[in-house]
Length: 411
Image 1 (cartoon, helix red, strand yellow):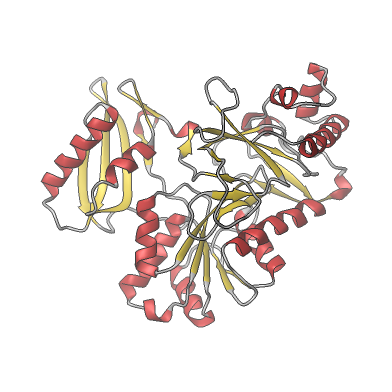
Image 2 (image 1 turned 60 degrees about the vertical axis):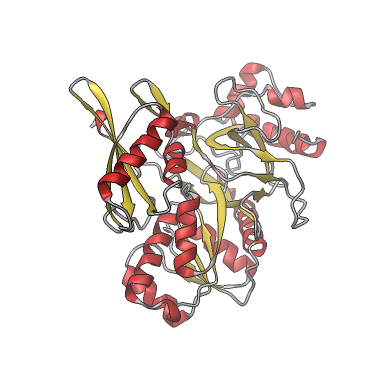
């Protein structure tokens, strides 16, 4: 989808604000002699912005609106390097609430729902984003935050909450606890809004099979408001995104050139009306594609596919580039395996070794299953991993995001 004239006008307004504020991107534009863009071609020649740029601007180098207009900050959840600090004006907060409220509405959630919010509050955008949208919609928020599973389940039962908001990892943990405790008939959940981490079909199916609820995949990142800039509609896995707030491109992560609709590549986002910290052509490193066909739900908002992974998820093992999604594709071929797995990479006696831990329901011999999984993985990536099969529940569950790849070569 090419940028429209209206969107170009909005970009020019943001360019003017960035240059006037003397932000890192404004300086980039000044150095390049760019004050505006008048065509798709000129827009596609604008420089990208990267997370490293945002870190270099720490603490408030991204602030584009006057400080007296900034009402809050949020920060990325990354654990390495300087954090990214994103300032918000009141309009930014309101715009974010509108987008998130649309997500709830797209999922068929109404004022009559009670929304159980488990993501973290504070500097992280997650919890407060789910709450903003809930309050904008007019539904009842139950702002639990993460952790204390006993209390989470008690409140679900007592408050009769109908919507669960969480990471996929915590949704799985809660589902398995509900099953283990035999309290499914006391839980009133109908829908789950899942965000913050990529999750595969196997995990989706496991959560749905235990809880019997509709699951929705919400998209967003701290640098671009937070969660709530897109969600799938009922019966679809593709996600609608709000193109009156963001312009989304798909580029080839190697050549950095825009790709045609339908081709897989890296998502690049431009904020069209953000005041506190507008971003132009921000490289998210998330991998998806634009779906050009109209949706059966008749929404006017465009769509992208599920997030397949990240360009920085890639592991180089024995000279081969491997993505976690490739391993997931293989594991899905074995119905006796659960959705959970871990990849350990180590360097022993001068060579790389990959170990894959998987969980099974016990319906097949562990040794034979490990052998079959290893053979299928080899056919996919070109070398044979060591596969260890364990019982369901042995691998760790997380209240936040599950760490699936552990690279011990750099410990």
